[in-house]
Image 1: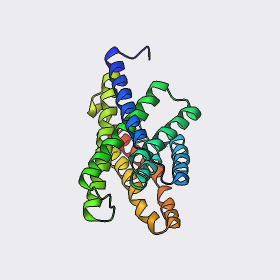
Image 2 (image 1 turned 90 degrees about the vertical axis):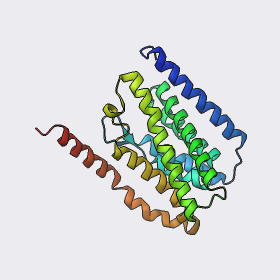
Image 3 (image 1 turned 120 degrees about the vertical axis):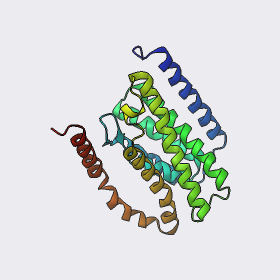
Image 4 (image 1 turned 180 degrees about the horizontal axis):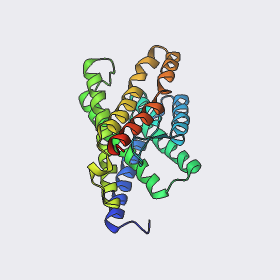
Length: 229
């Protein structure tokens, strides 16, 4: 972190602190409802986070962990979803060994945004129903808040650390936002499938195999547009 400017360090530590406060609140309200499901989600999210998909830009990537985060959010609630986030990011750090302060930042950012998304979801849908019109709307808005706030927090640190504004970094490009929102919403709505038949989730595994190819195709298309030669 020696090469990071003082304002950037202050911002990083502010995000660390906010993430720690939210996670402490989650632990205070944490009740284990389905321990085996929670353990399975932690394992799957860890594997999904370790195995990355190259993103639409050179500095972005996508992981199927967002599907697991969305599922945990809708099925187990925010406190246990935060546990899935913490465990999966810890496992990625142990396996992939990314820069420690970036990994803590990413983890804290996810904890912050999933809590804010939870506030929106609960405020609009206090009954926590997923199949009613208001429940679906609340879920979409909650996942939209997760996506936009996550990109905002990351975009600010990229701007401060690298001097790239939102347009230059592409942090608010439509395609990355759409991918993140789609993965989160898909994971949350898979809870409806789970409630009817857990085995039906296997049908969606086929669709997910196309995701890396779609992202790579978009990246090649974007490269051709920026460099016609």
